[in-house]
Amino acid sequence: MEVRQSIHSAHAKTLDTQGLRDEFLVEQVFVADEYTMVYSHIDRIIVGGIMPVAKTVSVGGEVGKQLGVSFFLERRELGVIQHWRCRYHYVDGKCYEIGHRDALYVGKGAKEVVSPALMPRNRRSFITTAHRLTPPTQRRKLLPLMSRRSRWGTTSPATAVPSNKYFCS
Image 1 (cartoon, rainbow, N blue to C red):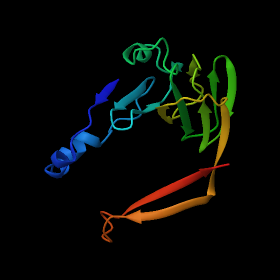
Image 2 (cartoon, one colour):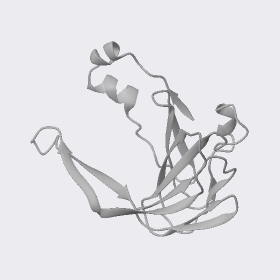
Image 3 (cartoon, helix red, strand yellow):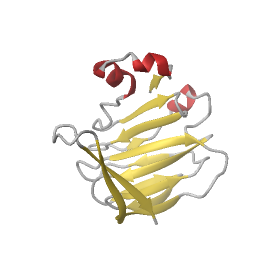
Image 4 (cartoon, one colour):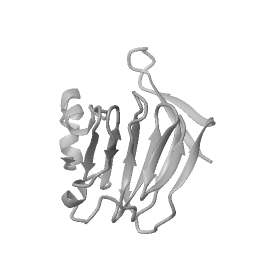
């Protein structure tokens, strides 16, 4: 797991484009048959991706040790967003089916999160944060009809960036 330190705002103002990319951009999120994780000291958030192609991928057995806990979700919660086709995920042995652009919320305390390899190009991304409450694991449907699309950047086609904000049902 890569660890990113926070930087002072005065230092951030002195960085050029490449310096900002080096500090904040997570370039490689999906790697075949592995999970990737980047821990940021800004908000204590972990961003990562899973792409099981030929083998089953289990999230974070050894990462728990890096975080100083017995298992990865001992003191955090996990949100999984499915980017490709319908998929099964196992949380502590219970099977959850999530479809394209669905989300799976895994509450604090889940000991095992497994993504088996069933079809090629099944990618999921996740975001995990520290949490005090323990809501149950649940499947959520992302509502594209209720999404808000906005653009930021200049009006030049090369720098106008669309941004989609989704709402869960």
